[in-house]
Amino acid sequence: MALLDSTVVNVALPSIGKDLGGGVAGLQWVVTAYLITLSSLILLGGSLGDLFGRRRIFLIGTVWFSAASVLCAAAPTLGMLIAARAVQGVGGALLTPGSLAIIEASFVPEDRNRAIGAWSGLGGVATAIGPFVGGWLVSAVSWRLIFLLNLPLAATVLLASRHVPESSDPGSGHQVDGLGAALAAIGLAALTYALIEGPSGTANAAVTVLSALIGVAALFGFFVVERGSRHPMLRLDIFRSRQFTAANLVTFAVYAALGGVFFLLAVYLQQALHYSPVEAGAALFPLTVIMLLLSARAGELSQRIGPRLPMTLGPVIVGLGLLLMVRIRPGAHYVSTVLPAVIVFGLGLSLTVAPLTATVLAAVDQRHAGVASGVNNAVARVAGLLAVAILPALAGISGADYQNASVFTAGFHTAVVISAGLTFAGALVAFAGIRNPAREDPQLAACGTGRSCPVSGPPLRHLPADR
Image 1: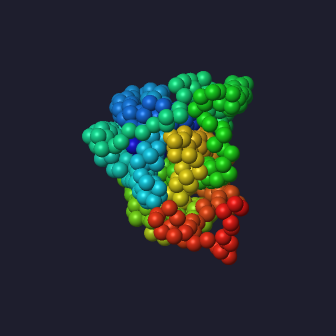
Image 2: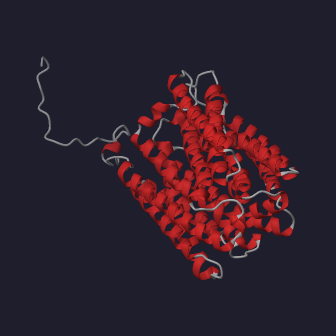
Image 3: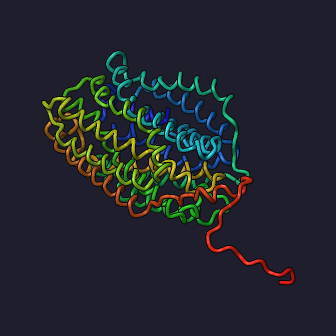
């Protein structure tokens, strides 16, 4: 549900802009309002799950998310839609970290990578199929129906929840880090305002600078509070793990690229190549098939050979797919330009996501799975948030530029090159910072099973009893 809504909206953005008004900045806010609350509160959602039960918080988030989706569908103005999207992000922050933490707590280690691979694959399917389903609904009826897709999914979750065991962290404190959550939300919201409204020219320069300063100060205050709190929602000590830190840096680089490109691509296909909403959504459908077929297998491969090679090659292949998108321009044929880029992009993403997720969770103690999942999801959402806020300005896209095919084409090509650079940086981080876990000696694995344990070296002499 959360990943579906991260992408299903993108294909509807031109229709939303036409119906409710607003330039590039307005469309950015439709996406970023959701990401601000999701990013800033997702750590709190992980902590609440560890404290009160992951299954319980997951179900509360599902109901909240569904109710907010109804508000989005009924929004009469762009401002109301943006506000409803912010409320929707709160529900996403409650349900997203719980999903991975439930998997981590429910599966034995030898099955966990495959389960995480399936989770990643289905998440990728939701991410990719969103534009296709959303495009069909926009073309057939209205963009408002894309938000109502969540209702049958939520009903299925509630019906199936009786099969999900409850889990929590018995070592959690009994306090909620409300101050930390508030500082994170204020910091991200203020910084996003400065990044979106400043380049658009709609805000006073002094207001933009003040907003940026408030954002930076609030985020600095957030880290100060977390460092000194007895019950922080962000445990800074988990970053002592080099593996955990490196995996999250890779997450930031890859998801920043994905967030920026997914925001622009569906709009670009409609505005510059004159695809219908359903055609723009269908253009990404091969990505769905690739993720569904390969993500679980990538998880198994990572378990067999270690995560370092998949997490290094995966972002490189993603970057090559992004560079192929430079060939997409008005009048280009789908089969010769869009399809190759989508296929290469999908192969790289399949190779990256499952090993990345499994590495993050394996780097911390199981009882901190909720916090680790929350941190990794927060990193991914903050990366997407910043990319959507910054990338259009870096690429020279502002105001009504998305309605000008030639200007939008030049800006889109610049954006995909920047995004490819991010994925290549992520590959370098993975190569330098990710380490494969030590393999267990199969002979030593026999110890404690009732069989003899071989010991290297010469046999020991028998010593007298008094020695």
